[in-house]
Length: 183
Ligand SMILES: [Zn+2]
Image (spheres, rainbow, N blue to C red):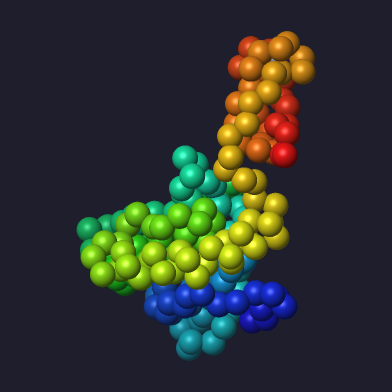
């Protein structure tokens, strides 16, 4: 597996399950650019490498849509909502899932996470600080739009349009699409 020149590893977890297979030999790596799933065969050799860009993760209400889930009563999953659909990664420990969810959220929004509690809260604050710069870089590199709200009037019908900077919104009155100003 090759990292990009300005890519760095943030987190790494082994024994990950993915898809319908029962194997939990895969490895999941979080970098400042993507989630990398290294799929391994039964002998532990790399079968293939799948990349999921962080820029494709849906951000709603200023929260990255990444959250703990459950495959069944005892199996925690990390559920990540990409624009193309949801991906579920099967973990062993729920705490690890929460850390992943919080890390990804912090990197994408610059906000502390909301899942892991206890001592982690102090850690996550430090993490948020140390990643504040990195998060900004990630957002810039991938053109992730600022979450600042802007309003303007619909160029077609004059109704008022609201959304985040640079976002394309559909006018509720005339149904046309417009990109909000980014500055
Ligand atoms: Zn309109």
